[in-house]
Image 1 (tube, protein in one colour):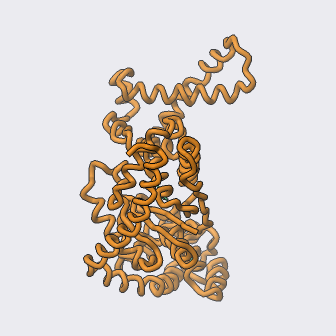
Image 2 (image 1 turned 90 degrees about the vertical axis):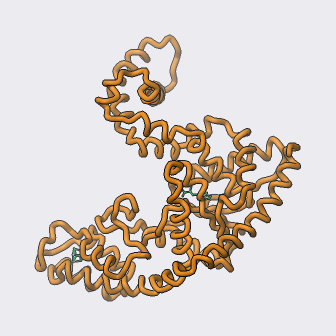
Image 3 (image 1 turned 30 degrees about the vertical axis):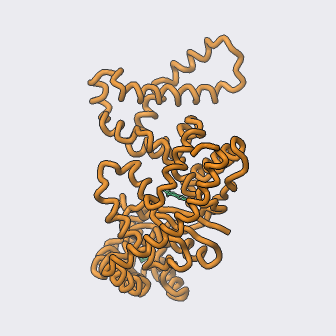
Length: 394
Ligand code: TRP
Ligand code: SF4
């Protein structure tokens, strides 16, 4: 089976990437024909103002892929921007993709709203409008099956309209100030490319006729959209693209040092590029059970991220011991962290050495993506020949 997945180049990878994504990718490359892509064009959708970081992030990420065991002899590792055929298919797909499919795409709205912290604003507008909408609905001269659903729809649309009005300058400057929103931020993400993000992703998948796409839950709407675009293309021009399946993998959401999900933006991540000292500092600073203030206090391992790490990195007898001694109070958090650090370090050390050797040899890195991108391109070229034949243009 042909499997394809991609990642935007965000730089160094952390433990969360490994347990959430990469470990699975490594397993898949033993069993399937795998394509792993660095989505550097996708990085432009939100990062077009800071393009100088993209190249460096690409190299860092690739270094980690190779370090962790993504094998260029087993998988096609390639750079999106090196396969220009993606751009041509993106243009053709943009002709046949209804705008509404993109505007209703939940990841689009979520990301945009998160980036701009608009969710609060939207909730506030909805709260202020609810009574008015109810009054309006009561006067409606039409028969309605489901008043509640219509009310929600109206509220959603009205609050979107108000947000838009805000940024288009229909609301007063004072209101803008009062709500603490910035017009510039809004226009930064209000681009055609950002809206078209999932169309480009559909291209990534379909141009290789991939059958399966391993992704996290957040990407499901994008895979679904790829299926819809494939269907639409096939209906219009004849069978060309297979419909790709999402491959959901259950992964452990590794906590970061503060107990929240590990993420670069939370500043709670442990990186494969971290030195021994950095890892030590981070581990000793881990969040633990806040009720366990000193050795002797009974703790609750089930809510403690340090214990979560023991479960992953320590042998099972140790895990049982830690659980028991934490609960009884015999084990103090400092000692517990030291034990965990030792196991974590023996996991990280071999990677650290391997990473240094890759990082020293930039030419080797570049050669690997070059060869991978050429292999990818041969397939993309073939698909595009077929696509042009089907569509009878080009
Ligand atoms: N959008 C994906 C993400 O942010 C990255 C991506 C780009 C991707 N192209 C892809 C994933 C193709 C799977 C298939 O995680
Ligand atoms: Fe967490 Fe270990 Fe402290 Fe228990 S003893 S609270 S598991 S760090």
